[in-house]
Amino acid sequence: MRIRLCLAALSLAGGAGLATLSAPSATAAACSDVEVVSARGTFEPGTLGFIVGDPVYSALQKKAAGKSLSSYAVNYPADLSLTSAAQGNRDLVDHVKSQAAACPNQRFVLVGYSQGANVVDNSIGISSAGAVVGSPIVATLPAAVEPKVAAVLLFGNPIRALGKSVTGTYQSRTLDICAKGDPVCESGGGNVGAHLGYRDNADQAATFAAGRL
Image (tube, rainbow, N blue to C red; front, top):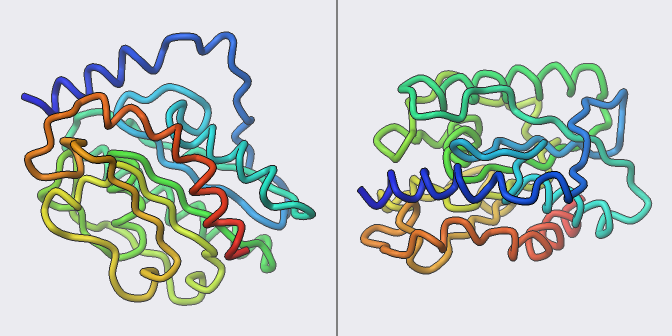
């Protein structure tokens, strides 16, 4: 019940004030130095994601001085359907593979919030099966692309409620933030509002990513 309330609150809260905020355009630019690939959370509005993707992209533009940035919003339903995260997993991998082939010198920052964190987890080989709005892995980034991924930024990551985390190849490049009491990523968490407050972590995440570019 807490999870459903949290997702409902996200759907309602995210729509407030959007008309007064400027969001980055989600574009797969020709060959920028860095592309931010963002998977939004369940029902989350915004170009890259009102709560996480948009503010992280804006913060990284300021932190990554001298580097050109582009962005891509993972194309998937971000709803409660059983195949939603799997569709995002497939789209993220297909896009990054295509972009890496077209722009050999481009680097990537992968961003995932809530269900979007499941999408990113799967794409780097960490299964989100069994997590809230998770799915089995349907595609993973190939070894040739792995060195091009500079940073992985995860927020409200549902696999953490299962006691899992990102391990292996991407571990040292991953920042995985779970707010205290967030019921989506903390087993037994009871603070629905905590899941909606990750905009406050955008600067921290951008600093982490910029230091690895």
